[in-house]
Structure formats: C-alpha cells, structure tokens
Length: 302
Image: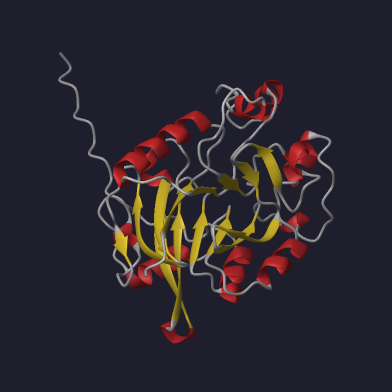
C-alpha cells in the first residue's frame, strides 16, 4: 500500500502578514482538495507578541500587529506553522529558546540551527544571514536595537552544527546560497521577462553548507524573488533542488507547495491554483518557475 501523502506549503518572508497567508492557505487547500498538513516559513516572519513591539520594531511598522491576536488567543492558526529566524524578528522573545519553542497554538519557532523531524520528514535549518564581522563573535542578548540586529546573523558554531547533518529531506535557509544564478545559467535559458539576479546574491557560507549536507530540497527567502535551480553532486548521482521564495506580497511566487509520498516529493507547484509545475523525474530549474502575470493594460488617457 502506498504511504499516505503529505502536503507541505513553503511560504516566503511573511513580514507580519499572517491573516493574508492564512487566507492563501485556505485557497490552496480548496484548489488541491485536501488540507495542508504543515507550513514552513523561511524567516522574516516577524511574530511580535505585543502590538507596541510591532509598531516600534517591525520592518513594516505601518501594518496592523496581526500576530498579537494569535499570541493573545483572539485568533488561532488553522494549520501548524514552523518558522526559522530571518534578520527581522522579535529577537528578544526568541533569544532564550535557541532550540525552538511554541509561540502560540500551531505556531512554532524551530530555533537558530539544527534538525527537527516534522511529520516524518527530516528538516534541517539555519536562521539568519551572513555578516562576516560577527560570524565568529558570541551571540549577545538583544537588549538594544543594535544587539537585536546582530541576533539576525548566524554564527560559526551554528553553521558547524548544521554542516554535520546528513540524510536531510528539506533544508530551510533565510539567505540564498551564493552562486545560484551562475549554476542556473549553466543549465537553463532564462524565460523572457525574467532576468537572472546578480551573481553576488546570497552568501558563500550557506552555499558551502548545502555542498556538505546535500539536502534533497532547499527553501530560502530574504531576497524577495522566486528562483529555481538544481545542484548536482557526486557526478549527478544525487541532486539538491532549490526553491527561493518571494516575500508574502502576492501568492504566485511566495507560496510553494510540495506533495510527499513518504519522504519523497512527487509533485510541486507555485501559488494557489493547485496546478502542478513539477513532477518527480522531471527537470527542476528556471522553467519550473510560475508564469509572470500579464501586465495591466495602459489607460486611454481620456
């Protein structure tokens, strides 16, 4: 008997837009005709527990302080959400739980670095971005805006912890691995209207991490654009498929779903339509990205 399938939704940088993301997931469930079993967010979630903290510290302070409703029990997340830290978070609330904790019902911080088994999947993760000046410095308690900013940078001990992992089904990173555009250009022709990002995007530390661990899939965010590329290892005998997600401004490129049979992805797609853009055995690359929306017609000027 085939194993029961699992529907996992990856979400790009939420930046506090929890109501919007929940509505998107409702639409995805309707399109796929089944529930989303879990949601994985790639950082910059901005789960500020208090409205005043959101208004003072969030990257998008003009937005309503939506997470406070979940922390206060006014609303409840309808499906389990697991997130890593980006470089914009409520670091004061996260600092004392480097191995993760539950912030509210169905809302889980995975931690700064490590491995969790979620619904039978081995999920490795590294929170934060690379800042060379702080890479080997100890992590300070975020008591000020400056030390809170430093909390958004990963440290060498955290990278070493993740680099020792093996047999990883999914790896969650906030910042892209360096070199993805070059690798994509070696294999694919960019679709019309989709220029390649700068060759300097991402950082070499997460690239080295992926090269050591060889996860089956990587999800990342931070740079607010969708991207897809395959990295090959051991002469192509094993591969890592990378999906970079846009911020949660519109769903077409910020929601990426995967259907698993056991621990293997059998199909995947972008956005809320439920349409499959990749199946097991097919190539994964720039051609797997969603179609860009048609430009709006120009007004007549009358």
